[in-house]
Length: 218
Image (cartoon, rainbow, N blue to C red; front, side):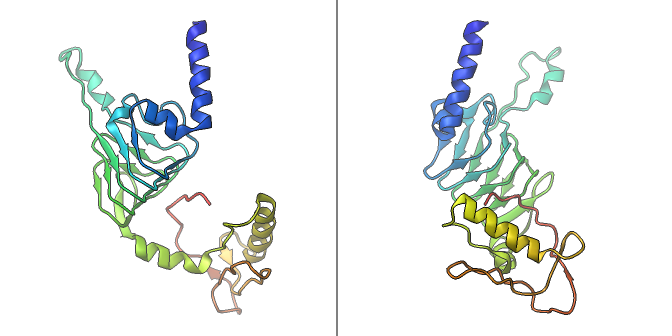
């Protein structure tokens, strides 16, 4: 028991220190430039060697890769050999939103976005945003990006403190009297910071665009 607790503690330390290296050591194929947030010891399931991840993939918080179908367990009293497995593959430059689940046989094409909480059961084409249970494409990534450009706030080069101050100030100014409404004007920002461009009309509050299905990490 003590040995098991000690090994669990060691694995958790290794996971927090470098999740990519940890899962590679357990057989997962993981490319270069991959970021894994909020992983736990079971993120890549009980058969991590059945999971392959391409280059420049972002895996957000609490994503699960499930490489076996546990439901067939109910048949084992009649069929002792009832075990079912499937590979999971995510191609280059994809984003997997928080709490999404990839089931046996799931394949995500390059340059695609999987929305938060979605369940991927089969093949998702390249270059699409897919959401739902089961996940289905709803738009191209190009359309998704074009529809969000006017809301971008460039915080890439800011310190955590500067980022906090900027976002609290800008987003406090942008929210109208009702949650989810945006004041229709351009928010002034300091020199050197990319401004967020808001809708042009200043006479009334305009309802924000449809709820973002993608829980992206900034």
